Amino acid sequence: SAVISQKPSRDICQRGTSLTIQCQVDSQVTMMFWYRQQPGQSLTLIATANQGSEATYESGFVIDKFPISRPNLTFSTLTVSNMSPEDSSIYLCSVDGAGTDTQYFGPGTRLTVL
Amino acid sequence: GNSVTQMEGPVTLSEEAFLTINCTYTATGYPSLFWYVQYPGEGLQLLLKATKADDKGSNKGFEATYRKETTSFHLEKGSVQVSDSAVYFCALKRTGNQFYFGTGTSLTVIP
Image 1 (tube, each protein chain N blue to C red):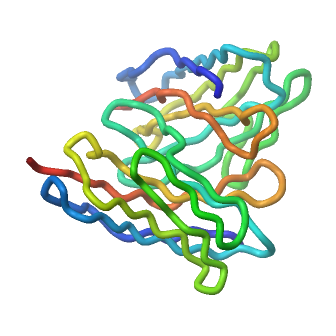
Image 2 (image 1 turned 45 degrees about the vertical axis):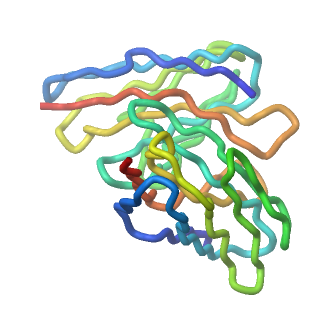
């Protein structure tokens, strides 16, 4: 299994600002995924990030709002831009397990927007 | 389309009680099925999985059987402990990397 860390673990932000969340994996992985978990709800995939190419966004999510970087095979960032209270969620990154069909998740970043 | 429906929570049980959390799915073809657990303040951890019909996944005393005829993957444990208190997510994966998660079921076990 992969060990995944995220920074920050939580933050409280003001409306209209942006926050960049970092995701670090202890091994090289091809694909990294970013999810949102809104209060009391399930996980929703935001985008898939491949190293060396543009991220692929799911329906309802756009690059201007959630820009993603993937500079190498162990690291990715997700920025939540121009935040509003509706962006208050837990944001999780995940990776595919090597040679398996399982995804492994980071501990999440709990974001509150005032 | 693909979707997962989970039993609504929250669920509160006494220690050593029997646990069932229902999960049904809708999918084309033959998905892989998963249960993930999220302990307070932590990320999701894989609890168990099954990749084909009639497979039984098991881990830490939890079991779930992939039932194609009823499109179900119910989670069971014979005797829960306080340390099992967490949120449990059922999920499916079709070809590719797309996971579909249920809404989660919160379990609280009281001594």
